[in-house]
Length: 164
Image (cartoon, rainbow, N blue to C red; front, side, top):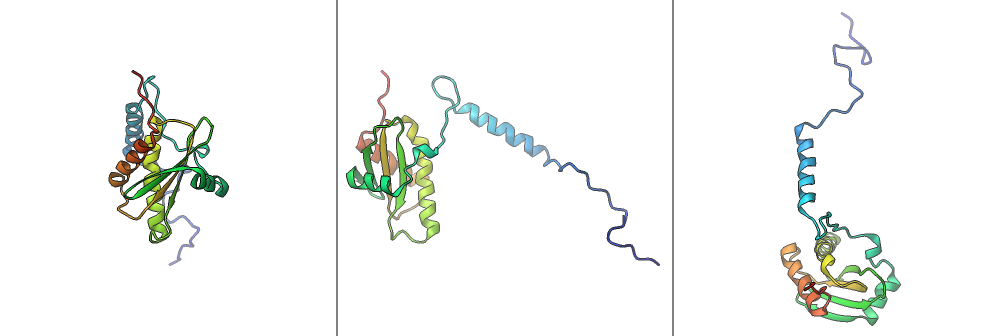
């Protein structure tokens, strides 16, 4: 009896060139995402954008130092905010943790949580400020960090006035 070689056809189906579909769930996920996007609309009827773009970030050491040195600050338990007018059209933000905040995973998670809260809140705030959020150790969830961020924004007077 002859043993077939690995490259010889052994009754296997040939692979199609197309990647297999992921099933009916794929279409469902796209539909669900469209429903969520259509549910989040601004006052003009268009889809509201909650992006945190590069131009809205303070990225250089010199700019961050300027906010800490020349800015006015407000504090609540768990977070501190430094504010400096920048004279530009957009407000920019940076999120830093204190040195004693645990390991890198904990520090990065804290920054991500506060950054996500900021991304949602920033649309209703005044423009033209550089903001530095200093995050202190504490529970890292949006349920605890969002009220802290809201209170800091209220104290700093950064909320945009409602029309009316």
